[in-house]
Image (cartoon, rainbow, N blue to C red; front, side, top):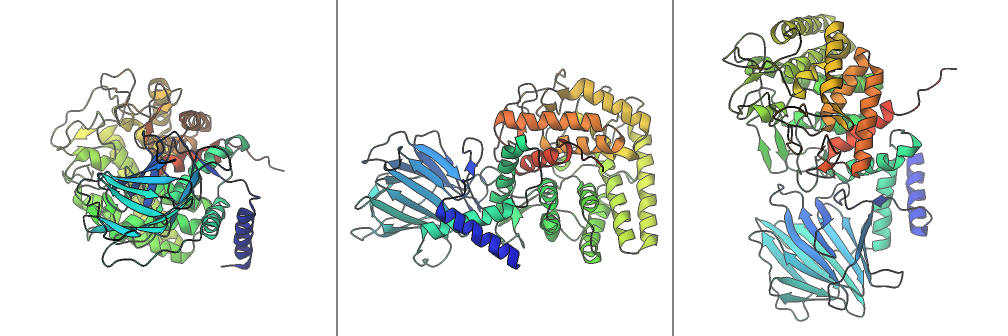
Length: 583
């Protein structure tokens, strides 16, 4: 560690211990609680004074293990559940009232530290063996499911087996418990030091917080919430993760998908290129022999039935716009990006006409737009204009990298291929008014497309014919742009659904792709307006949700979503600050 970083960390620890630094508030209504490099997540349930304990290393439908219900004098009563970056505080009110703190330690450990409080542990996982103990008093017991063991260590207090779980009772007013998830042999006793542990967690967060990209002062709170969410979504290296992985979420969608990851990579990479590159390259570490990226990756699971759109060249060029790359860094990205690009032409060009299609086991999943109205048959393959636009940009990115590696012949070849594919896009998909989607095996197209997917070629920006660009920007404004952002389905369409996934709600990735293309194509005014509307929507909803109702702005589906946090932050940083005045 460099000396300056060392002293900064020491200062943060000192300030935290002394209580001189205001704690960062985490809003548990709109996110899940976790921390960097932990596989544990917690969140309040609808039951009073209750936290759901989730083992995020398991797939989303398997990860919920326990409900932790906090009691005062053995009784359930309303309690306040609040959180900072380091812990969740459970309080009956007042400084001397019963209270407890819950924090995460290491990859798989949690600590409950309570004063005048008891805790009920109730199993919520199907098939969970709640365990037993012959000790009296019980100091340790284990719960088991699917090859994993949750070791409950009574560091202070006693445990009593109940019909549906366990009650952990304070002795002499104190309760201290360690929850240790593991496989194999029994774990050693954990010896937490709460003051030291919490200060170390705060120091980790504060060191990360210093890299927050600049944003307007009035948006700082939402920016920090987005930045904290990305920090908390880091999972430790594991079976299929050679490096740390920023998960999509840590409860509902606790895995990595290979276009989702590009947006956290950009947010992290805005101020730390290496952090961004690490996330950018993560799916490539599990690519197959053909260069195909796995669709979903979790520690013990990979799904390869489909993949996701090749937006990686676009993302890489943004990183290259922000930072000078060394030749070593270019050498890291060039071979996998080249192989990924060739995969589409070798394995998704089903007509052998030079135009790849979304296919696989479910074409909607492969597009990333699972149920878009223009991709109505999941078993059919679709030649889609957005895919061709992404490939044009990816080949231009490869040309740029090749130039940086002093390979002019390769750069020229990639540039030539990009321009040729742009011509195919225009000839095959532009009908004079719209870009259209073509189902492989038929020439039929929808006469009047109603999906925002048909406007995604705007991401080409300056590479798109100016008249076509202007026509599409006008259609975006008139048909799809609501007060909250760009709807994914025309709100006047018969296909539109307020909570219809890709049939209406506003999504972060499509918003950012369009904003970036509009800026590069000559509409910075429209870029800024869309950015403002989206960021205002996130603030209105209170958090970073999977998507948003395009007519009300309500947050929908999963909360604490990585790419929403990343896009919100990037839009604030890039579009909502006052422009710098040249001296």
